[in-house]
Length: 496
Image (cartoon, rainbow, N blue to C red; front, side):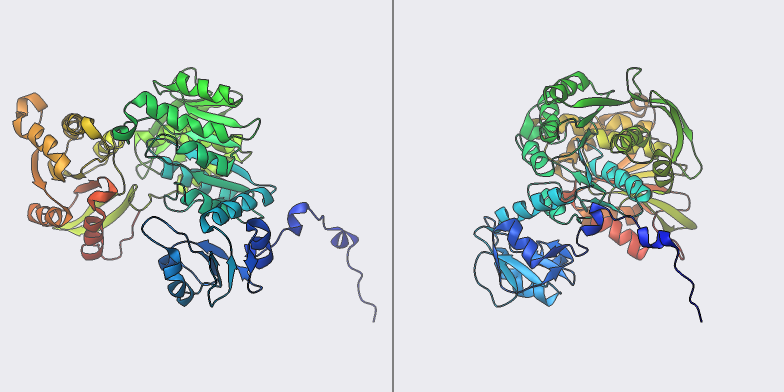
């Protein structure tokens, strides 16, 4: 019996350079080549981890040494959770690669990952507000367009350890890499950008986060602009046109030889907002001008700050060579992140209430933005649980007191203030009369999250309430969110 001959085209499937790249994240030989170390065994690793508590089966554990902690102490715990090998600076009784310095080895692994991902366009993101949300949005847009070939830093891995670790986790076959970069002090952004060597660098906004250490908004803008120093030749700098420091940041970008793209509401913006109207579900329908075309898309995330954020996202997607249509679909489907806008339906007296989880971080600009978003949220009553804003130094009292006005403008009925720094706002609300504020606001001050849980319980949530929980992460308001979602979740409800 004659068998049919396969179509000739089946024998001519195009082979690209990407097809020759490994499927495993790292082999022992590749780690040796990258770090100059010596492997005890042959192995393949599916991931890279530095915290033994987060190790997954197949991970390479990097035993980092710090001032107060030595990762070598946790090698046994890492292997108990499934690690296949470790990077160490001394002999151990498990598969390993021995190097002179484990931190230097992580950096070398990061650079090797960066350089071997030959197709990957790298995007770096910094800013005082919105870094993680914008990072996740850009990733979602590019991951959809590339059918799963995008990579990004997880959580807020944005410091001197997190950025190299995130790079070391990037697969050789990635088509996009999205990396968040943060700072607390001057001189921290440039080294992070040097690790990533981004093709596109975006600054979300400039606000008084970490002003205690930097001293002024100008200094914050200058430090954030150091992200442009790591751009590859011909790289793109994306800058918020509405910032009072836009020209300052543009100057830094041009000094680095970058192509500048601006975004925002300003008439001069390269990616300019034309119109935004409320969309079903609390988001927005946005129309933007990109210079040579206009685009219309929906954002699932509520709040005016997300309207401008989305313009920066679209600018980054376009600069990276991504697909704008796929980006629009991704933005329409994005949900809030844990601690950064996630919405939960919880049980309340007579029905259900809405819980808005912004418990991960807070500064004056993000407080105002989320309070404004709360004002646009349909609710019978609006309740805010606000934790102290940290790292404001001598500016702390002033910035906390200034929250009184946006609280009233948001139509908040009751406020629970948590932390020492919030005493200034409690004093402001206490001395202000209803006539001065235009509306009366009841409030309570608590020392910590346990008291806040009790105070919210005493106040009592009812059908139709909307509860915003926001504060610096160190205040611990995530405990209150966990309490509400675990004990007061409505039957059949899911987080937003």
